[in-house]
Image 1 (cartoon, rainbow over the protein chains, first blue to last red):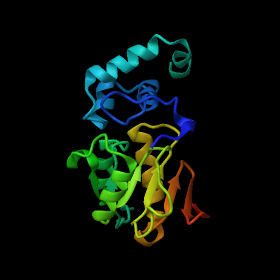
Image 2: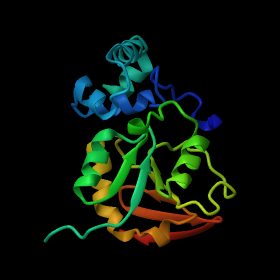
Image 3: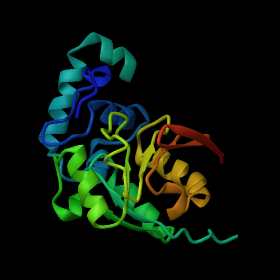
Length: 65
Length: 132
């Protein structure tokens, strides 16, 4: 169930895993493959798409990278 | 010094990284991941029910995890891991440091919030801090 407080916290398609988790991995120098080995049910294409969408937005880029 | 064996029986929901499940097993903890049971994209309530059926403590990393005291009645308990970083490495470090303070009895019918430097036990809205 979604708490309104975290409504803006988007999830990666095909999972309940927040994009913020993926951001933490990338920010700390892990590869996309390492992230996917921790969440093997997430498709690489969906994780890559989430990253690409982030790169198009200015504010998460400042936060993430 | 060898790590003291921790006798916890755990069920991890899909927000918990598989790498951390492997790490906890290496510490001697009995842990099943939702993924191995095909329980992906299920509701929080589903995970609460299945963990109760399995008689295992539910572990999650989901800050938004839904629960109420009614759902925790007769439940083995819920552990919410909230390290600063959400990588499996950070989760492993927090678990290694804090799990030796936990037992089946402490966790039962409680929500245990574990952060980098403290454990907060919440049972029926009564808060207790356990020092790490």
